[in-house]
Image (cartoon, rainbow, N blue to C red; front, side):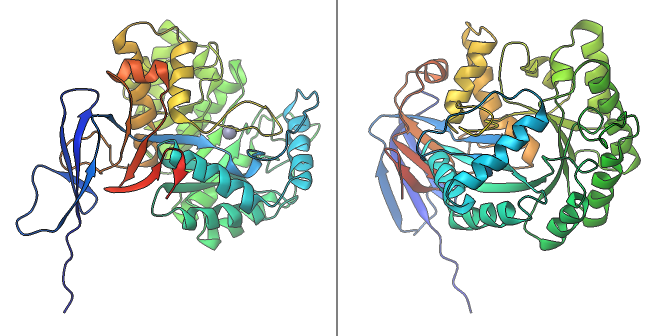
Length: 402
Ligand SMILES: [Zn+2]
């Protein structure tokens, strides 16, 4: 006979969202109204710090990072082909992916990331080495963070022979959670081809259907090419019955829309229940997430690349990403800054199919303790994360993973 052990931790003297001080009670990883009768209790002194939900990085590339390595000087690159060649160069020049990915993912935990969707390159240049390395890091951090791995055909499926087979093997391996894609029309066509018949989508949707996997497609294409691809993806999503299981990342073609065109695209996405992710890369490419969510489109926020061959920027800090989002949107009102925090906390949870962490009884006991009077100030100040709590357990303190 097994005996159920009830684990109770009470975080004393904390201020949820910067409000009045009280206790947060975690019972078996979930917040509760009260301490169960007879349960043994551990106590953590919150020292009057603000408590805020930990965050979800809906789009990051931990396999590409040079985080923590000696400075890497980049060369000029414009087209995706040139950037991809830079990825391979960095990969060959740096220590193994397993070391770099674990370091970056651990760093993210200490900054209060409770979950991430990791896009990991799958290409003949690497085989499945990146997927295997990130999966190992995921196992190491399983007590602290949920990780979904996307098999990401960064080099293209149609233009890089051998990739389709590798995606199939990745799906068979059981290591991945999501099948990826990239610009099926604008980038991924046979050299010299037109991209009008995006074979990549046939392959990606085929694997998704055969293996029961969700899909997450990078779409940088703008204008007519981007819009036509979105329509194509929406039609395929409905035809395959994959509503609620398809994400389009970046979606710069949506960011450039306004008024009627934005409303009709939001309707197209909402009907197919296609989610979007944005990385707040600039004022012109950030998605109008409040407008979209009011129309039923789930939107998540992500880091994208972190100090990789594409860019020296990025730090896997989702609170800093919320700051960047507010900066890109010229947020000034408290409601606007709170919306940035909510996107970083809840947006990615909705994209990844995770329960919302909102400090209410019944929600995951996932939160961080930090200095701040209120959420708007926390977004602007980006204070140090003193304590990070995952499922009622302290997993990081003062920047150190426990
Ligand atoms: Zn990306």
